[in-house]
Length: 125
Figure (cartoon, rainbow, N blue to C red):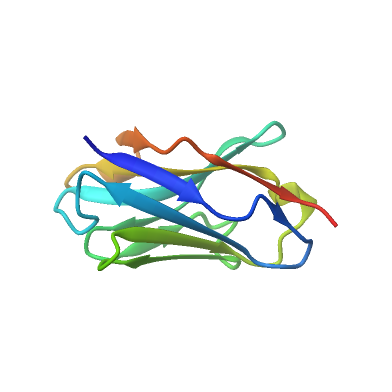
């Protein structure tokens, strides 16, 4: 059973960088046919896909966030990371780490199979 757990500060000051960690259990993040996404949800925006890193380390980002977003991983610790720079109150949301399965980009970006519980991040001074 795949389990994902997000962690990080719940409060970030405007203009600072939001940094979150996703710890994965039950599978190696390098296992074939798996990819790892960051998705956020807020009352104003609904669900917003932020980006993905595949088991091979390939990355793809939401164009509207790409200039501020970095997704990375530590394969030795089986962890994923999200960094979002220059945050504003508009970045306040629940952030989810989400596993997806498939054999191609189309499937990676639509077949979400494992969700973390999410972590609330508020941007405020």
